[in-house]
Image 1 (cartoon, rainbow, N blue to C red):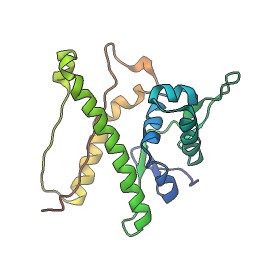
Image 2 (cartoon, one colour):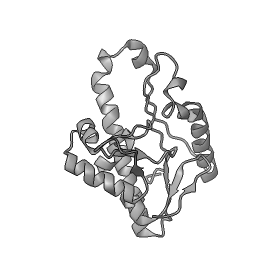
Image 3 (spheres, helix red, strand yellow):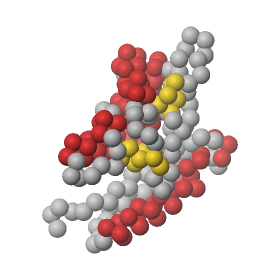
Image 4 (cartoon, one colour):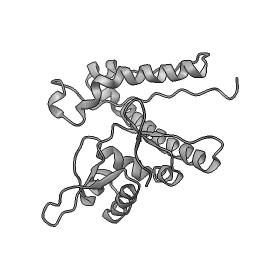
Length: 195
């Protein structure tokens, strides 16, 4: 396992190919998400939350621990729970010239994106039945523009700064305002290969 390095926004930088590949499985993406709130969960609890088998969850939890994404929690009698590594997030970093590592970044990014799109589609399916205040507060935007690499990096930094005040609310429920809900945000910038 590589030594942890931190990005300027506090996320863990992952650049080792095998560590990146560990994030390409859809169940592993869902498992990592379960631990974002600081909970300690057993493989059985993970299986109940994901609809997967205990054996499958156990295997994938061990793989995530092998690459430093999870660790063992405090034993509770015979139960052996897992917990997240208390990181703000993960930044995948590979040079495009390193084809194997870059392919792993693409595969992991696709797995995260597919999970996010599935969750967004699940929200779309029930949005009409939700509280209208929440439905109207939700936003989906798509835009195009011309920018330099420096401007794209600055935009990413500004988005991170906008979400900064909300980050501690996962770990400390007492910081959540009355009536707050778990909200997801998907933001991506990329250059259009057809332009």
